Image (cartoon, rainbow over all chains, first blue to last red):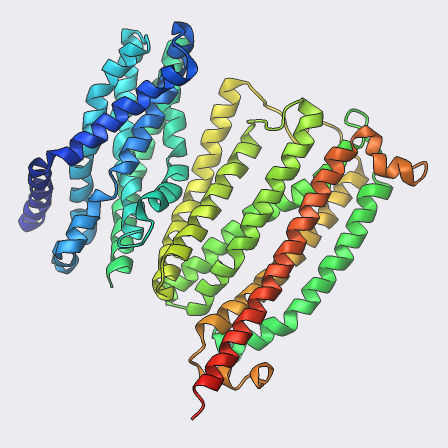
Amino acid sequence: MNSTLTAFRDVIARDLLLAMRRKADVLTTLFFFVIAVSLFPLGIGPETSLLRKIAPGIVWVAAMLAAMLSLGRMFADDYRDGTLEQLLLAPQPLGLLVGAKIVAHWLLSGLPLVLIAPLLGLQFGLDRDALLVLIASLLLGTPVLSLIGAIGAALTLGVRGGGVLVSLLVLPLFIPVLIFGAGAVEASVTGLGPAAHLSLLGAMLLVALFFAPWATALALRIAVE
Amino acid sequence: MGNINWFKYSSPQTFYPLAGKMVPWFVAAAVVLAAVGLYISFFVAPTDATQGEVYRVIFIHVGAAWMSMFIYVVMAFWSAIGLSFNARLSSMMASALAPTGALMTFIALWTGALWGKPTWGTWWVWDARLTSELILLFLYIGFLSLQAAIDDPRRADKAGAVIALVGVVNVPIIYFSVQWWSTLHQGASVSMAANQHMAVTMLWGMLVMALAFWMYCIAAALMRVGSIILEREYNADWVRTLPELQA
Amino acid sequence: MNWDGWSAFWDMGGRAFYVWGAYGVAAVCIVLEIMALKLRRRQARRDLKRRIIAEKP
């Protein structure tokens, strides 16, 4: 039991350390998010009331795309240098070790988005309550993106056309998260209250927490055997 | 009951001739049902009070939509069997079903759009059913792309199975979210068939055409799985000695 | 019978484009799929025949 928790912690620590050595990878995801969000007013027009209305959807879609772009990194490096095989051979349950990698991925690619989103929301004229709900929805939703994305990343390990292929696999599965994530902010703006949306996001997070690491582990074994 | 060998046809070798024999029967059934169904659709079902003649599109729209959803579930089922029992033929069947399922989804979307334009004024209506159907098409495309991108057939089988199963579990969640989204936005909460009192002949037309589609899809999948078997089992003696290949 | 003659049938109450566009594309899709299936089978057989000949002792 003790060794399992240590292994869990060690996998996270290793991924974070490796990422620190290559900060560019993490930062590019963040920059993509910011740039992508900024494109919309340029494409649609700066009219404030319109922007306020579309802001939740835009921030959420951009977050989804940014999360997806970062998925390639989850397993590819370990696959290339043999660490992945070691993980598969380790005595600890693979689902747990995979969970650790997903936690690390979220800390590097999901959490930064959550932290920067309020600034982007301000650019779109969202008020304080809407911003809070935006943060809450992203806090609940981005881990789900990492969890579901991990399955896609594992399935396409070493496969040609990997990046775009992962998008095809994973974006349709993200749609419920998008609907409830953006919907939560809208609901708070229109006065309906975000509670229902946020609860559903929370439920999705719980389901994904139980289901995704196991499915990812299965996908990894399929990819590596 | 106990003496029946349920697994007799679970190998490519025994299934191949069986599939070959079944295809003509399903083709015949499809043709007959389609003939009857089209007759009912155009010559028996009356003109609709509100929609005129254009409603007749539902006779193929509904059948294609039902098949698109049904095939996905069957595909996921065979994927699960193939994955759990390491059964090649089951995985081949899942791969054989996917293109036909995707085609049915496309037909459902296309006919839905052509029905929507004269009825509600726009080519595309973001109502719950059509939007869910669109997402289903994405799921099919994901499955097909993944299998196409992986060279090793067994890895392709298993990876496809995982994505099909993840997809099938998500379909209710996706459908529920899209319903929620659709009603909240009160955009097009149009119900494709249920908002009018349907004449009995209309229901019959839909049912017979749906059955025709079903028979066609089975025939297409059996035909495709036969080709898949030939493509993958090229090393087997029973394939080498097939009469149809002796030149 | 629903129609006052064939021209009324083809006209579909002025909605010919939509009705025949829908049925037409569906029919074309099915025909294309059948053709693709036949082509695939022919190709598979051809490839196998070639293998058998190539590997004859």
